[in-house]
Amino acid sequence: MIDFKHKPIMLNEVVDGLNIKKDGTYLDCTVGGAGHSTAIAKKLKSGMLLCLDKDEDALSVSEERLKSFNAKLYHTDFKNFEEALEHFKVDKLDGILLDLGVSSYQLDTKDRGFSYNMDAKLDMRMDKTQELSAYEVVNTYSKEELAKIFREYGEEQFANNIAKHIVQDRQEKKIETTFQLVEIIQKAIPAKIRFKGSHPAKKVFQAIRIEVNSELDKLYDTIIKLFQHLNKGGRLAIITFHSLEDRIVKKAFSLLSTDCLCPPSAPICVCGHKKEGILISKKPITASEEENAENPRAHSAKLRIIEKL
Ligand SMILES: C[S@@+](CC[C@H](N)C(=O)[O-])C[C@H]1O[C@@H](n2cnc3c(N)ncnc32)[C@H](O)[C@@H]1O
Image (tube, protein in one colour):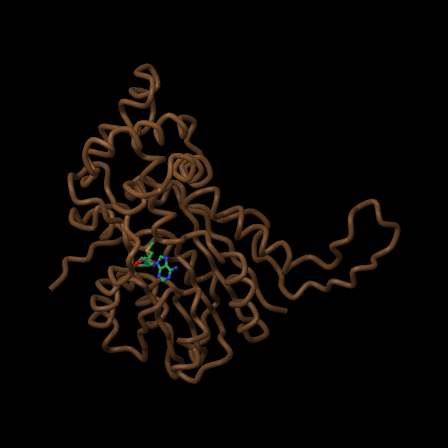
């Protein structure tokens, strides 16, 4: 049995925010350890919950945890959610949840190779059936490609230098492990910065993880498509953990909740765009002080919710 530990973030805020109807149909796109899903399922009577994840460990744990509820699980990337809806012959939904990023289980399980704090084979795949892993990224991407992902997905100030060191070192021998990579990153960052603030490898590890799991690819389009499957009054709730994701969610929600998209200088509206949704709160919802004190992962979390008109 897998020891799957993950505390659901802003559990009450998510459940209240989805405004769950007991006969509704709900989709959890990132079931993880079923923390949010269990709370949603408990509110249902004749309703149904569909759960997706691209990590098979998450699905097998959640299947067990949700077995007494009307919940169905499906292995896929949520970008292919329509395949799951077709499979279960569902079209319209009353609520959808995306709790983006990695679970604590994935981060804390050494052999998944996500953590810069544990020495393991470089991996970082959420979906172990996919080919691309951190090992291929680190050992085969060009210096320019590496620098680009460190800059864009990690907002890493020393992107070029870190990429240069990786390419130099891998000519001697392949970079097989997380600690080998950490050592190279440390060499490439000036000492006075290396010892300041968070772990020097944090940004590069985030960037490689985003690349390996295509975390930002098609996220915007998927949000727009998911929204189209909501019934009137249905809600889409999304939790993000870094600014790159949050920017995409904010932009998609803004398109869906804005009437006219003409430039402010246009004297009259010529685009004819009509809003389809309403934001439940203008600003993102963040975790309470109590939750932040007991769960450090909650600090960076932002929850945005939109309701279909
Ligand atoms: C933060 S955890 C979710 C935790 C969950 N809400 C809970 O309460 O236990 C994120 C989960 O989403 C999955 N995931 C991330 N991106 C995904 C994607 N594009 N498609 C499917 N699953 C994804 C990860 O494998 C992970 O299990």
